[in-house]
Image 1 (cartoon, helix red, strand yellow):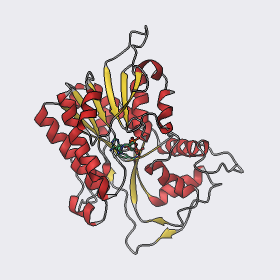
Image 2: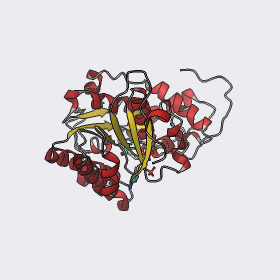
Image 3: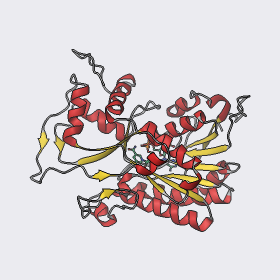
Length: 338
Ligand SMILES: NC(=O)c1ccc[n+]([C@@H]2O[C@H](COP(=O)([O-])OP(=O)(O)OC[C@H]3O[C@@H](n4cnc5c(N)ncnc54)[C@H](OP(=O)(O)O)[C@@H]3O)[C@@H](O)[C@H]2O)c1
């Protein structure tokens, strides 16, 4: 362990001990920050807590008093069990965001280990971070269908099209649900769309790289496709809300703020930041223009989540990419405005 976990002093708001797997990840870091803000004592896991890429965690408000970083690999049950002992709740965020077939077991068997280690260690409630890749990838879904928590991606379609990340997240969510039911654990599932917004860590993750590549001009053209987006700060709040709400157990929560055609995505980036070489070239695939599907985020709204608007999210994403040196700072002729 990197630092000792001490009781928070004197504010009377201190809550119980929880663990976040993958604490140094893009989403995990914001979940840790949100939980510290809410007064929890937090154990965060990383495969190498001493790695400089996790240093930002120890600088978070409340970290000195209430955050402990612990070594754990989700493929090793024993280490997880040790870390979860004494925790009331576990947020299972850790999972590679990749289509590499070799990494599928990390998502699936890693989740099985997490649920069983949590149950054996006496944990009461688990929040599992799924993905809308487990929900929206169904070519046969009628255009009239409203995407909500009842939807699942078509596993065979994902496999045939090489979207092994979606396959892995589907399998992992099923494993989490089945194992938690068997073991009597309370489980709530957050299902985020492609997650953007400012990062707390220095390193670039898959979803913010998706934005960076358009700004650097690495993308010569854009595709006929639609994508769901969500702000990382909303994802973190969603995790805390479903953890704290007693009725959330046994449910999925779709965490999507907007569904945009790539034309609107590049248009928004160009409008906010006209100084960057964001492509205007459309890669015509000969198919009709894909229509943004309807979706419902009502379940999270009912828990009190107010979603960040996409203009603010993309604005903040770019500011952060600049400040971390992932894209050059180009001075605009006119300042970007929201
Ligand atoms: N980013 C998105 O757009 C998005 C959207 C929907 C859902 N999600 C889900 O949200 C979660 C986090 O995504 P992210 O983009 O924030 O991730 P990220 O920044 O790419 O980080 C991946 C995390 O997975 C951990 N990890 C990988 N293999 C591991 C192993 N064998 N044992 C323990 N930890 C391991 C890494 O830990 P180390 O630091 O030890 O390497 C790291 O913390 C994932 O479950 C992902 O499926 C992400």
